[in-house]
Length: 163
Image 1 (cartoon, one colour):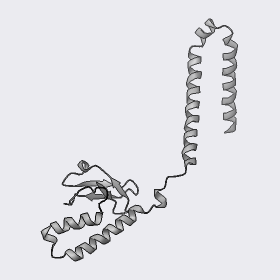
Image 2 (image 1 turned 180 degrees about the vertical axis):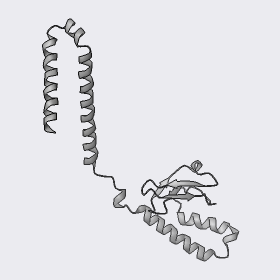
Image 3 (image 1 turned 135 degrees about the vertical axis):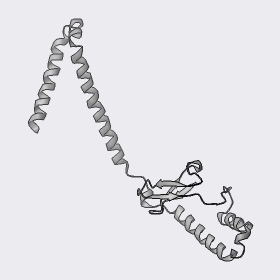
């Protein structure tokens, strides 16, 4: 079913079984407006391709005997509401358009940088932990590890001097 926020008129598609017959509180994901929503007794019948939504609503109102006395005014009100909904559904608002992908690309790039820094830090800690057994197996590795740790110490001191 489609529920419309009474505050900002944003439409949301939710499953029917999420709304009990007694109703429930809802919150708009767009404007954070809270309201109580209760199911109304509506005839819900899907449209088939080629059917006109105006004809479907008018047929249901004519079948209902309680609405027969004001059928002409009801028809005009329903036609006006349906035309309004169709016009609103077909209009693309600027807020409905997707955001620019530059922001998404930059965020993705930033997340890769953060993951790389964390991975490098974990690698250095792991190497420092198993430094002695590695040097026993690879004797020439000692000088390279020493240079790596000295470089990291220099970077650390440089960052401290910046602040």
